Length: 168
Length: 168
DNA sequence: GTATATTGCTTCGCATGCGAAATAACAGTG
DNA sequence: CACTGTTATTTCGCATGCGAAGCAATATAC
Image (cartoon, rainbow over all chains, first blue to last red; front, side, top):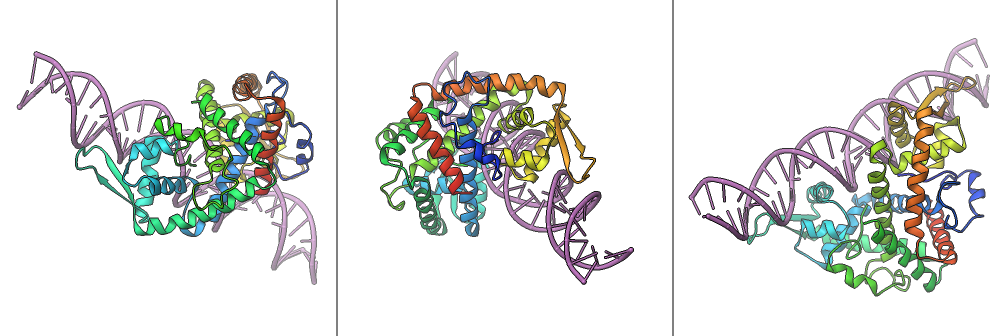
């Protein structure tokens, strides 16, 4: 990933950023770097770092949090279903599940009906961790929505979904 | 990273997503997972994947693109300056620069005045790659801004900056 | 002028995560 | 029932990237 030129630093370069808020929409993309791309990359990186730091005690990363939350809603989901839900590749999720299993937060067991399918479930420890996850994400959500109206946040949500959809 | 429960899949779960566009602002964060967080994680992941796929021929990732763009603006920047600009840790950037150097896109040379400092510059190949980068990012920018007004994109940009700032 | 602190970068160990190939289990055809 | 194809997951190799530790060069203290 990358932030981009003059987008992410903590230095004096930040000052120059405040001006142009058009997101690069009126630029063919050749004259200067499209800002929204790097703004998004940077915002995500900070989100992931913040979650990682905050859940450090329990070894809960952003990805792990997503998995736990999903399993809370759909216990016994298959590996593929979880991968789909958290937008990860089956391969990438396999490793994550292995770590979560080693940490004792989830269990993996083949489905009796179709032993190719692995059913994933939360352990007691996993359910306990869930509370921490929800608390941390709730706090984070407060931080990132503070100062924005419901209408504005709706626009943001719509744009984020648009990005995900159009690049799929 | 993670997408989140029912946020990112390509399955029927998507249907349920369209409803609630408030970004979770009116929720303490305990009853249901804060959506904006996972929407952002997913959007970024798709951005990065798209850039990676698109620049595959030249081995240009999102991070590499950011570095090249920054160097175009500030040739001879130090490693730390580049890291700051693209929001990467010095450690992470070190590896990336090594790969870019091996690919022949950049050069690294100690500053004569302070030999701790490494000056990074684009090679001829690096400058050539820059054109491709700008073209790819321009196309991407078009895709992700299409269908949104300047005002809406301004809100999005302001929100993304807010997120980056408040989590720093 | 030597000891100490600081700075800038790299190395190391690890987590994350992708694509491609391998593996295992099921499904359909003859 | 073997043969083939499909599906679900894992393994492997690699890229990315962080924190901690290490190293080299400079700056500061005494």
